[in-house]
Length: 515
Image (cartoon, rainbow, N blue to C red; front, top):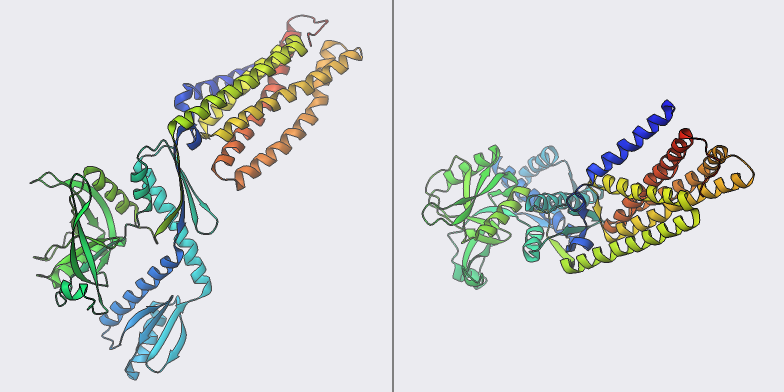
């Protein structure tokens, strides 16, 4: 036995053993996709227009505060569409406002000017970049929430310009998952306006710098809203969730009720300390997605940067709230345009039918190969089984998710693997009919079939790569199994079967091959 043959045998044993180790136990190592395990499929549409409006609103608030800090006497600063309008009633202040906008807000360009009026806006390129960033930020925020939710092997990907596709295999509590994913989680701290009564506000008498929000009280058992407490708050937030450093569930020591404790970063703590110090005796509302959770009175300066959100939470609600706060707010609301649920029984039925298809397909192929190619057919069948071992091992190694199209890819792989053996065996038969010895017939058969097998597999592999690159979840699953199956079939059909033939030839002289 030559050293080259020994090296081939060692390589085959190592590859098969490693893949068998990776794939064992199979039910724990292979992740099942949505169509096999059951779960939910969501398609979300990101409201990028509102994301742009929020960006301009943030700019408006920043300009107001900057002008106030510089003691500039200006009129109203407000958003007009996607632009910032500044009323400058005094001519001597106009140059100072221009200098402020040029030095601090270079991304805003002067687009219109009239007496006592300046209009600034973003360029079209900046607008397009902001749209792309909004979808990208929403994608990352949702992915972070899902990771903390604890879903195994989720799929979160962008589709088109503004759509996000989410697949969550194995999720049982659909309503909770939808609430967690779709919640905007816009956290704001706003001062109450003590000069406007809630009655006047409800009658429509509201100044332009204030709005009416509600605190909802729910029934502890049914969760139904039993009371809506109105509050008049200033429109401008003194602090937002952008300065949030951490959010954790804590328990009230007196009543043992869960609440969410939040920690602000350094700049947030400084702002919070300054706001509470200047507004002792006033009430500060904690607003989340336009709903007031609490509105405590400020008794003293709070320099620690610590605050809490309470609201008769259940443990699950407090946990979900801490998750969405830690992962950050969505840059804009998202609309659920598709919500499809796959039940576990349907997934199990798909698994059983898929496994039955593989079993029937393999059985027919195995029987045909043994009848038509005799002992060589048995060798091809062994290679086919090893091909599946390699395929399962590689799926486990790469953490790939097996889907129903993936099972179709496995069935196709069986056909590809057999096709390679059929080509080789037919070439060997041709050489035997020409009167060549078994050793020469095997050498020539593999040599002549190799280029055909390689060309066919490379073209199929190219298609599989394209499907993986441009396809969505299930199509990618098909492409992954097909790609791995092609490479595995090359290994088993060419290297394994030829090594077995060489091993037999080296053991004793062979005058006839059972083929």
